[in-house]
Length: 353
Ligand code: SF4
Ligand code: SF4
Ligand code: SF4
Image (tube, rainbow, N blue to C red; front, side, top):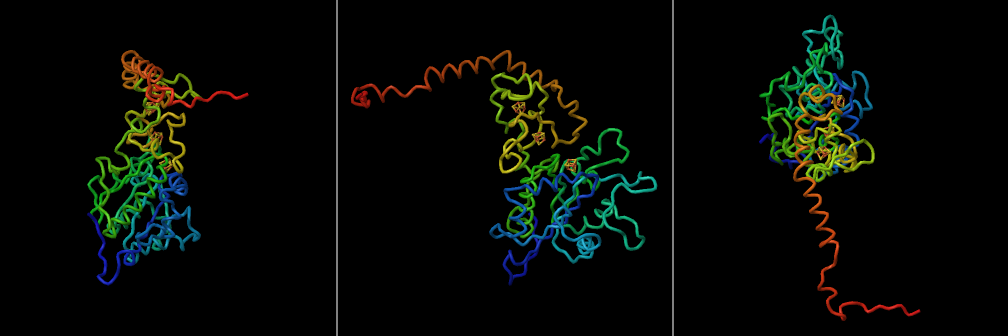
């Protein structure tokens, strides 16, 4: 478990002001930061106003939220580099370009190097800050696995944070890179994990358990399919044939949910509303390593999905559906007999006019 030293005279909450340094300018569209502003459980406001009982003070540096501009805004990153902000969690949004193949330019830039007036790349910020960070979080599929900028034939050599620092990298507090994939990442997944890490750094919670792909198990342990409210239709071999109002399973329209780790159908998008297949959109596997190339064309049925859904459709599925609906009609839609088996148990109501 990771923890940060706390003076014996201080309470844990007083002792730690954790800074979140959130770099949005990898090869990125900043969609994760925008998504994060709609988090509700916990909300960004809960975090920055200290509304969560017992939580250490948190200062979030993110340009989507900042009033400062230019050098004044970037100063926090220089302070972190100089050891003046400690502990801090470094959040990376967007993939990292391979600056060895940037020609005469640079793929990313954040702030200006005072020594030569040149932009500082995100890769260079990682070189400077990774040794000092208490934890590093990659948000969005670009930062976790390369995502859209890393599609085949891209000229940038785009990669995720683990590709750059190495899958075995650990922070000085002993925490591996935490991956929160999604395009964008689900808002509450980001805020919840930040709060978890802050508690962990204060010694008040264990570090998050991660799977082999660096994802928190608590958030990515289930597949989309295991969380989807259409899953019973799959089991009963009942599939949608067109987009729109058809409420049945979308696997024949290209849904990749059975092989995708994602909690969006469970958690919804904003305050438990929405959630891709729940509301009629196929799962495109946006949380997965290899997205998007590996799952294209999105609207084509997956070959394994076809086999498995056809088995359900032409074997037990219709039998299950028929048996359940028959049982509901025959047995469960009726009140139990003991309520009406004697005259005195009924109201005896009769019209008086
Ligand atoms: Fe934008 Fe998606 Fe990349 Fe996030 S993962 S930066 S939302 S393209
Ligand atoms: Fe599974 Fe997709 Fe069907 Fe939902 S819509 S049950 S995720 S295949
Ligand atoms: Fe992405 Fe599928 Fe999850 Fe929707 S359900 S967020 S498409 S992985």
